[in-house]
Length: 238
Ligand SMILES: *Cc1c(COP(=O)(O)O)cnc(C)c1O
Image (cartoon, rainbow, N blue to C red; front, side):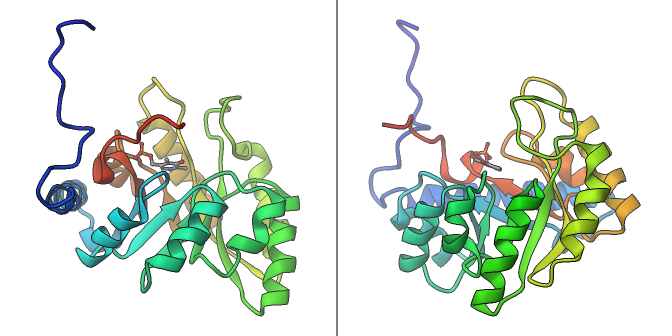
């Protein structure tokens, strides 16, 4: 819009390459998670903050790690491999759509794959895990609202997928993940995911992103995946 004032949101601050701003953002997100946990009678320690660093420079990921951030999430195998090589001593998560031909790059490289939504993918992870001599922890991604634009298994197909995944020796299914539909109140999806998780007796609930992580924590998230609120807005691709 012409005449609109520009904000500084997109630019790192000048003197320290954005490190001070990054530390402040991280602290603010941690505080908001803790407040949401306390509001709902939960232990703030029961919520893991995954800083989603997709399309973020490795230098900034390193700065966040030096500032004490432990868990990072990537949604592309190539970026995961590149950043893992230059940011040591942290825990990685894969949160994006995983192609079967990228499974070899991800299995064993991440603590948790959040986005298993079909048996063929779980089987590919299982085969790679067996070759690598690891058990890969995964979550099943659920398309709670049946949004055709989103990945994830339909709730009615979830018990059968879980049963099949549980039969795989190289995969450990520890919970559920969802990405709610855009433009609608995400809370009903969080409530529904929690009910599914409780019914299946699983431990973890990965839900909540920059715009809605407090609601997710209030509804029982054990893992929140926060990108923009930590690193600032992603620049447009290209
Ligand atoms: C990008 C991404 C996030 C983080 O989104 P923000 O809106 O930047 O917080 C979380 N989960 C998944 C699956 C993502 O792809």
